[in-house]
Image (tube, rainbow, N blue to C red):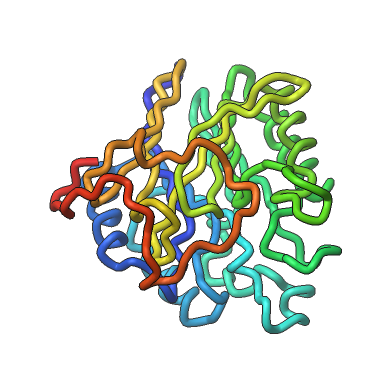
Length: 285
């Protein structure tokens, strides 16, 4: 019989440009709340440099709860092409066992889907690409779950294929969503856009819930650093956006995935106001 599950959904920490106050807060929350798992949906690092991965591993090892990590586009070497082609995840070596790990409980599973490729026929390699191999592997894992188990798919890029073939956010995203809809997945957890969202995407095979986490870095877009708290009671999945600024969860969520998915603003650039609330400790939301 399925029991209640508490999951923390983190994304886009960007070690190298991380928000240390936000990370300290999240670490305290994990120590106190003891979630059943932490899902990190990509961009652990800023430039995929060794010292950034060392800092990421040090922080993750301290959490002392089950963790699964999806690589993000920032985690692939962009400046050393041989490494990018031949061993794109090589710098995860010290904690490779946590990368794309399926986590499973009675009635619920976290199943990985890789949205990164070493190269693609467009100039902007930061955007996602669901290869046929990656999708087949994800579907195989879902199909192998015990009967009645609901799947939450973890992926870095939102599975949204907007615009033309050259500007699409995630190539192959539409097909992936359609295949996931056929399997009635509970939701798709992603990151990349640095703002949280909880929307329903329609496909020919039915609806799919897409849930995005914000960032825990200094590279904010329109909302302060945050993470998602997910509660599953066997029937419903509740998503709450937690943040240090005291902003209500609903106000933290954007209405849709940005079509351009442009990189977030750098530290020091102005942020659109969302109802400024003084920073509090402990956090309210």
